Length: 145
Image (cartoon, rainbow, N blue to C red):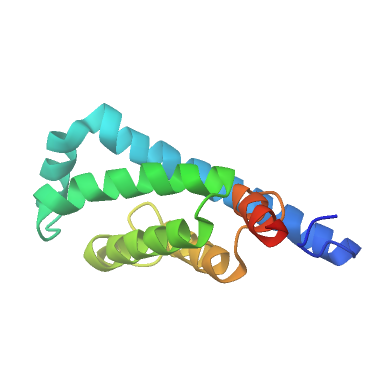
């Protein structure tokens, strides 16, 4: 049995919940980051960030795309999960502060979705990847050495 405690139905449910949360949130960011990188490109993202008034758009636009794509993928597989979640939480905090708060709470222009993604990533950062993750496999290997 793994060094990761899975002795109760409760821990199995928590691990399953973390897996589903990581998977869905990771896919959302993977898709948005992929759109920024592969559909709009660095030039398009830079222009959009400049139009929205985001500081240093030539850096922050491409960086947001890279972070969303790589950290989103990391969440999906559960690799460097806490670091990925913190990066995505910071990304969403920036989205709220620089763009969405002007639109109020509700969509289509408000911050409710960005806030939900921020909260999901903060929860993942606190909870960790859970059992169904590469992080757990690495931790088990280290424990057996």
